[in-house]
Amino acid sequence: MKKRIKNIVVGVSVCGCLSWSLVVSAADDISVLQTRINALEAQLTEIRTLLDQQVKESATKAEVLSVKEEVKEDIQLVKSSQYEWKTYDSKVHMAGYANVGYSDGGRGNDGFDDLKFNPIFHYGYKDLLLLESEFEFEIEDGLTQISLEYLTVDWFINDYMALVAGRFLSPVGQFQQNLHPGWINKLPTAPVGFRHDQAQPVAEVGVQLRGGFTVPILNDSSLMNYAVYVGNGPRLELNPGGDEIEAVEAVGFTSDEDDNKTFGGRLGFLPIPNLEVGISGTLGNIALVNESDRDYDVLGFDMFYRWKNLNLRAEYIKQKVGALAASVAPEGQKWEAWYTQASYKLLPTKFELVARYSDYNSKHADQAQEQWALGVNYLFANQGMAKFSYEFNDGLTGEPTDDNKFLVQLSYGF
Image (cartoon, rainbow, N blue to C red; front, side):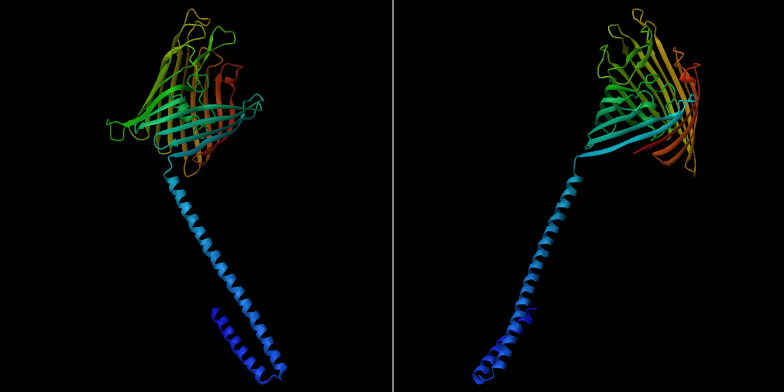
């Protein structure tokens, strides 16, 4: 374009000289002079247009260069941000599960009675600290009930030991601490005796030390895991008459009414892969308000074995409260429960068969119950399933513990 402008300028100069010559030599030819003048004006107009276009193109190039510089700066910023994230010391993670269920108890009280959402939050700092917490949102009679299942701060002392402080699920036995979430439990309900205020403690508030290590007993892959804790302990619940112990509330309290801590834990052994046996227990004291202490202890055994597509589980728990002659409820109490469970995946299909027998013994006849539960599950994924089960219950005649049930549940873990 510059060459073209130069040619036009040269042409204009030449034409100018020729035009002046014509004026001197042929002044009488006015029409020819006018024609030349018009041509010159047209050429000047074209020169202005070309110059304007060149200016615009130069401006556009400057803008492109400016944009390129901005893009380079953005790329450097992104790279810097990625570097910061890779070296950032804290990490946040969310997990949890949800259940939706239907049951028919055989007395006309069937309905969609299981609606639960449990988000779980994890906040980790390096490989040193972990904050973990689970909330439970549940609908009961049209009202939303919110509870804190557990909240702990975990300090990873080394590869074999972690200190856990706060409200944690009881390590006594296996069901409460590892199996109760809906997407893990193979059936819609917990075994009888392993529910709230029955034979197995649910949670504790205190400090817990837990971890695992290898042991050279059978082979190099033999493992041991452990959990020991000290906590505030449970409370006693009296019957409506106030003269007999109804249950032990072991749900994790932030106060200690008898000023005596409870000690407990579990020791697990994996002699070979796919087999684990465990023993657990609790020792301490428990008391009613303004009364002396009485003995409190829990003893438990559990077992798990996997062979190909077959899973076998068994667990036993006994919770005992001593007698106290000077109490408004002088008699001691004992709650005892156990279950066995088998599940088998029908590969290559997504169906799974489940059978469970559980038994719960109590001095209170309306609490005691024996149950057979049979189920068929459809696994949408490893963490999501639809459960169909039927429970054959044997309890005190006329009580809910004696009613057979049909249950359906959708459960998903994330």
